[in-house]
Length: 344
Image 1 (tube, rainbow, N blue to C red):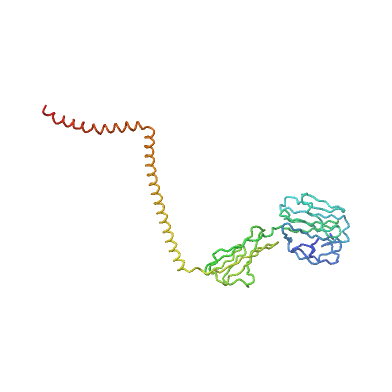
Image 2: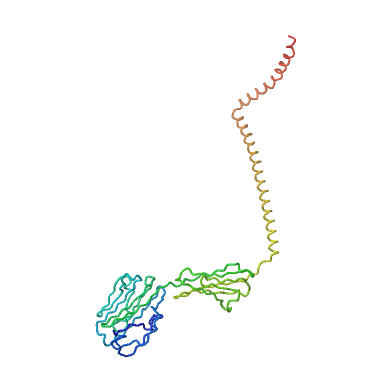
């Protein structure tokens, strides 16, 4: 065959690590036949293209037929199935000057040939509004009898890292360990975190950062570490950052802390005693009030009964007086009887 498909490595082609092919006008049926021979080829496997979600990409596929390739031109773009037992999924094709779309119609608006006329040697495929569903291995196949050749490439659609959150743990006290943290809530892995100082040179010795977890650990905090720090979260398709102002606070006076603790404890005890005294006074006042209130009710009840039933009260008082008057004579009579009864 004399037709060769290759990837053009220029600014308009998103090929990464593909193969460079140089040609020499030689006749050699064993390699290509038809007049073109691959003189040198640098291969690094199926090259990978990484793009951010929402962007667009052009999958480069250029071809150059030989004079002996006189058959009808047929261009096919398909997605290679990861399962070798399954058929590949056809996407678009170009035959006899007509473009055809296959498979998922939702992708039809997003897929198009990069060149207006693919028969002029450029069969590159453009994909707009990339999503994770576009991640796959694509194959460009060009046939022009008797020549046929193909080219594969892997497309990986990734999410850019979100704006990370920066925070500090450890109290920022001089002499204590301090940790600066940085984390992005979203973003395709692997994410890499990098801490650096702004306008104050490099980070002082004694700090160690972890590019995977986003932690910058300072074992012994001092004023030399104080300043504004910037953390960058990046992956293959994007980078975002956040800033943090690290302070170096002097530790409090221990003697003052002890005195303050003692004074605070005494104050709490005093407040507790005052509360107990007030509670006791409140309960005593309440009992006294309830006792006086019950006496008032009793006196009021007697007065009310006297006003409503005066005759009853008068009779009751009269009977009580008679009982008091008759009781001594009755007692004397009983004593007299007991005195004279032995003589009988």
